Image (tube, rainbow, N blue to C red; front, side, top):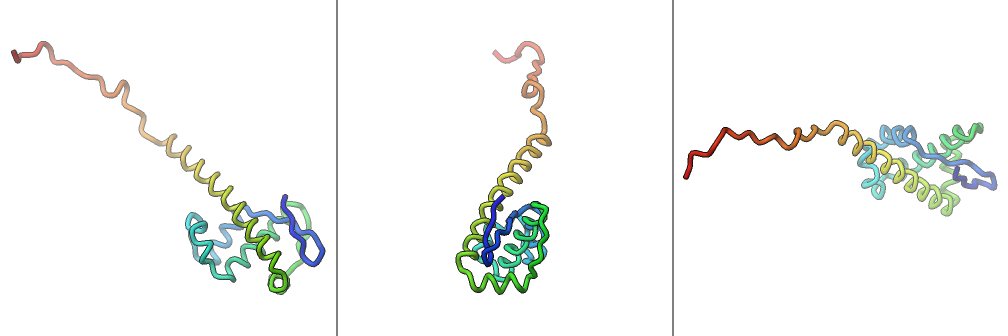
Length: 132
């Protein structure tokens, strides 16, 4: 699991579908539009997503997460390296989730695709040709 240091303390970071769905509601973006829209996300939406990554990372690691969103915003304002590091983690993890999602969609489409007609619709002959 990835970690970032905030004020000298390591915090696990994990972005999963739950984090992205939560930010979808917050930012008003469909999850499939997120990757295209990440460049134009309002700072508040990006900060919220980064905060959720810390929260979900702590949950996944079985650690207690005591930081408030307000504290997080204060720390982020002071540390440009942390902002960049978390933004990179967001994008890396989201790209992985998108690839997994696209693979599932592809598999679902293949499963639900109509079966090829048996032998491409057998040609029915009606007997000998009457044309000369």
